[in-house]
Length: 449
Image 1 (tube, helix red, strand yellow):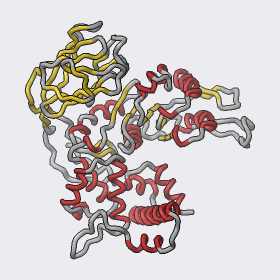
Image 2 (image 1 turned 60 degrees about the horizontal axis):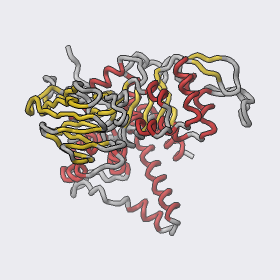
Image 3 (image 1 turned 120 degrees about the vertical axis):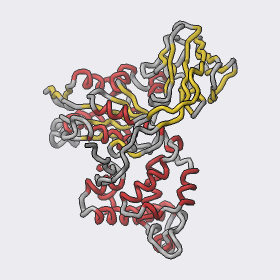
């Protein structure tokens, strides 16, 4: 008997009807190379693949061309209802549709697209029909019921069932670390450690030591031996976050360790072997970084055996409401108390901070009392926490100091409340907050000082 799905926020079982996979409207297009070195090559887009797809020389491109005038990632392809959207992604020599240079264009079939010395014919092979998409509304702690997210879930499930290195791409705040942890938790390594190393948060002179560890006396201040993240993650998963920020000089050392599954600690002679599944994440366009010479091509191929791109919130139609209610419920609020006009305004926002920004908006309302029931209904999202703000403003502090004090007050109240809701259990409090454990621990440690 199939069990009802569990709510990803708190693990409780929620009754949902079991039904056939939902359907999404999508047309089918075929791209055929009619001129150039790869003449005869073709690609079909039918709405079932994770989108966008890419055209270019890079190994991650679904329409991979050998044309030397084509960039590694030249153009992206996406299906928007009945139309095919093509976007030039910063190519060297541009993308032409019917002889006109475009940055972004919608195609309906019958057009010719020129990239480099290659000509591609676009044909509409089937009008808009309904195609099955995943019935899931979440993968681990990653929540989303939009078509853009449902297309990703089968790929996430396949990645969790393998041990191959994978690169997770996406804008800041799209949930890359949460997805990586969800892949780990649904994999065969779930009982092993999940370790995160953030390349952007470590001083350049300490990166090698943090990655591989060091022996006593290896450098000034090394008063004892220390394990690096590869040793800490042995038997589990290591997420190398913001891999695009890794210093160029350290990239060959990382590559060597990945190829041999072994390394030496800084200042050490003994070879240390490890058994680690490596995931990496980046907000950068690594294809462009490789092309610019800032990232090693061989390391890129080692890390990006599989790739998954998390869409920004503005491209996840309907997910703002789903996420807002999920965050509200996870934080102990009544999801039905979010007024329709507020949700409608949130749906229209661009959310440059993506899911993280939305979560913070919901948390702010809850932590500062904006969601308290009253006869007049919930206060609008713009309402200020008068007691806190007025008290701090009355002190006539410099702007930077005042802003820091407000943030500290918010974080303190938030951490106290969510810990109280979960009996002081940090793991459950972090999961309910929608943040990684290490991030919650950082905030908790900061406000607890």
